[in-house]
Image 1: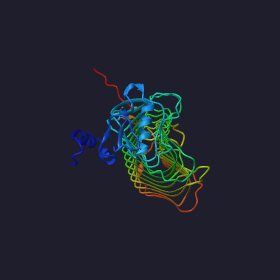
Image 2 (image 1 turned 120 degrees about the vertical axis):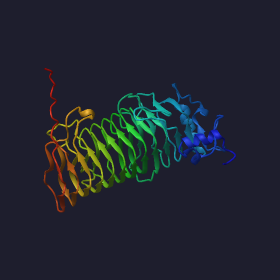
Image 3 (image 1 turned 180 degrees about the vertical axis):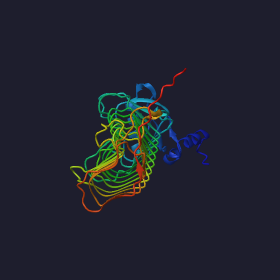
Image 4 (image 1 turned 90 degrees about the horizontal axis):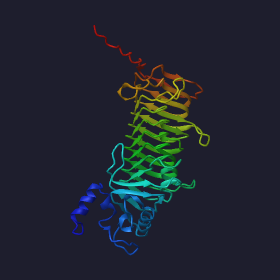
Length: 395
């Protein structure tokens, strides 16, 4: 081991999954900062941040980020709760914390919104080469339409190559993560939960979205933006009020091995958009679509597992679809339909299992198709409503 590394530094680096050592061996702890510094990771507390959940730490955190940008370094957010308004990332700067959050709460290194008039908590617009690792972003349900992490670039193609890893983004009144005109990024092992808008809203190009929880958001788990060249794998997308995955005018998607549970509307909706036309070149394989349409009108096609309208070049193969109620057999049994499709061309819906997949109809064809639409070999049956409980009587 390098003699410059203390045991405490080594333990801290291990807890951070290697990000500490990737950014540099020493943490600046004496204050100051600047281009002449030899250290490469700056602790926000060295710049005056308190992390006590009471003081406004905006200026101190921003100063740490700005100084890290000068030395092409990183910022370490020590465990604590840092109240702040919007802080802005700088190009090629990492912000690293301790990811001690769980399913329902933030923990470890927490940035908590303290400004109900802010547009967002973290402004990622100048985000080329940025890493966010091991942080919790808490919106506190303040204000209206405030996003957690927000990129708002002009519509230009420039590879951003940023990474969001092991972060929790929750309780924002807008979208958890909203990325406008982003190009080339990854999001992994993060929890985007309990936000008023979508969990992850993306308008841009080229992304890897893998091994995340997108849970309990007021909009969709993932959706609405127009994005191309995306791999979505091994995500759990659950209990989102407006649906699980919503694609509009999307292109070149690989959606594989995701678990989509108890969506308010369809688990997966793929449609055309006014700007880009039909969605194209999409493969949906090996996913589990479970008890969708929780909040939809039972007579509408939103009460479905898969909803297609304006799609070309799609395969929906090898998926499992199952109807159900809330946990503990509470709530209504949904969805009404398993698969609803219209206005498709060169599309294959085949070899999916629809055993107990819906309550009224397994597959509804609404027509309007072009050439090359194949729908076959999707075995299954309707799920019967649960039998009413019989009250026991005593003699």
